[in-house]
Amino acid sequence: MKHAPAQLVSIDLAQRSYSILIGSGLIAQPQTYADLPEASQALIVTNATVAPLYLQGLRGALQGKYRQIQEVVLPDGEQHKTWQTLNLIFDALLGQACDRKTVLFALGGGVVGDMTGFAAASFMRGVPFVQLPTTLLAQVDSSVGGKTGINHPLGKNMIGAFYQPQLVVCDLEVLRTLPERELSAGLAEVIKYGPIADLGFLDWIAAHLDALLARDPVALAHAVKRSCEIKAHVVAQDERESGLRAVLNFGHTFGHAIETGLGYGQWLHGEAVGCGMVMAAELSCRLGLIEPAFAQRLTALIARAGLPVRGPQLAADDNAGRYLELMRLDKKSQAGEIRFVLIDGPGRATVRPAPDALVREVIEACCA
Ligand code: NAD
Ligand code: GLY
Image 1: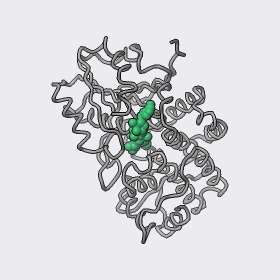
Image 2: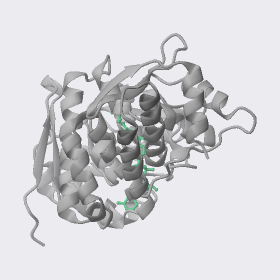
Image 3: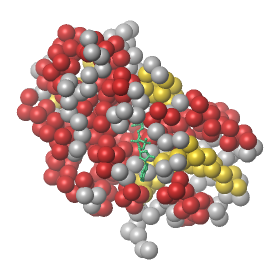
């Protein structure tokens, strides 16, 4: 089958720069991998859901380039983003006598991508890896920018490393098999880029949401490309999140509390982020940073994308207290003070603390 040429977004990080390829049918095309460094071994990391769909195509495309191609198939699910599962990757690398040049290929959603990246960062103190994101969420966010890691029972993504891939391959064709709920979860991260960076993009999403939900290839291609451009621009300025990059965490402070509080895998990451954005917008509003109309518009868009907009109860007795307790463990907290990503003007974000009493009011107003 003939495909339109891939589009390319570059991420400019000096010697760690790389390309994000966006197009259809890319995973199974040998040409996609032509510029990767020479090596004799490749290890594909995927999961039990994605392997039957796309592993064979990837293997076929890599055949001419690597003498030995091995694979490790992880259990599927956020609840498996753990030390135990990570160790399966190390078992495969060591069991197959992989060397320092071995290239890891992460074939899957954000869970596979984050764990493979962390394995690549730490195996022999660093081997090359390639991101092949197969969910919308992973294509627009997690595969780009080099955040890798695993969860801890007490906190989400608490153990990890900044480690950039050699290449990111966003194959839009694989989004056809994505369950509807996962498509909506990915849209949460697409929507996120509007309020924090690009109001024009927010308008575009609102106008094309039905096309995105219907998986129109042209609309999906634009959503992935624009999201990657915005993320690449932010990461290029602040790779290790010493400041600006934190704006990409809009909705995540509340969202991570939801994921950890309910137990990993109960709400999807994108669902928690969607609802977290509603709460963060409400907090921005109560701090007088934005007009209520903007928060309402954002909430309506998140709901239209098929995402929950009311937070869950995390504790029967003191629900807001439980949210606050979990949010104090957020990576942005400083000396026990929670720092929120807030909208301080349409298309602009800031990171700052807020009074506990006000945060309590927001949680009470926003929870079911
Ligand atoms: P996921 O990896 O769990 O994938 C979602 C589900 O879709 C899984 O069941 C998966 O097997 C399945 N799947 C994947 N591709 C498919 C396809 N093409 N067809 C059918 N099914 C498919 O979840 P996710 O939403 O991709 O990623 C969420 C994770 O990403 C979270 O752990 C989150 O913390 C992390 N994340 C990381 C960053 C970062 O910067 N590193 C950013 C955002 C999110
Ligand atoms: N997803 C947030 C970041 O990459 O910084």
